[in-house]
Image: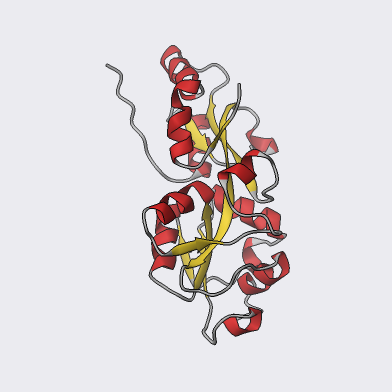
Amino acid sequence: GLRIDVQTGGSSRGIADAQAGMADIGMVSRSLAQDELGLQDYPFARDGVCMIVHRDNPIGELSRKQIRMIFKGEFNNWSEVGGHDAEITVVNKAEGRATLKVFLDYMGLSSQEVEADIVIAENEQGVKTIAGNPHAIGYVSIGSATANVESGVPIRLLPLNGIQATAAAVADGSFPMARPLLMVTAPQPNERAQAFLEYARSAAVHDLMKDYSLVPTEL
């Protein structure tokens, strides 16, 4: 008998709406910043952020330095990193997206340094963009990318530091670009929100998380 209204908008919106009391629960796919610590956070899973290219792109792996140079516009052609003679299309995430922050932090980049050809919001938008462009590169959730590959979408996940982008690598801590998935509330959530939080962090939903290649947090 309880209606749950879910809205999108990224981690920044989830935090802002929870702080303002506009949402009982905010969803956040990164660690909280110092100025966001007034919220109560409830970790429920971990996920990785992976680089993806079109399935027909012959590139097997890119170093962190090569990825930085591509996203800074210093490499503009795939032939500069061992690929075909084709112009690189850089797909970046919009401001306010946690995936963007995770990517920038790991790569040691600022938003101002990124020379993007296309800016996307949701992971699914990024997957569709790269599936439709054999010369594009971007980054999305490992869970989202894996689910799409299993559905036959023509993208490929690139390893980082020689580590394959898999849920198992996120689980054992070896995959370098990973992040926590949180739900956040006011310091004292109401009874209905508390009941939902307990359910959403229980073993009863671990099968759902694994279906999306997420790693459940052991409580």
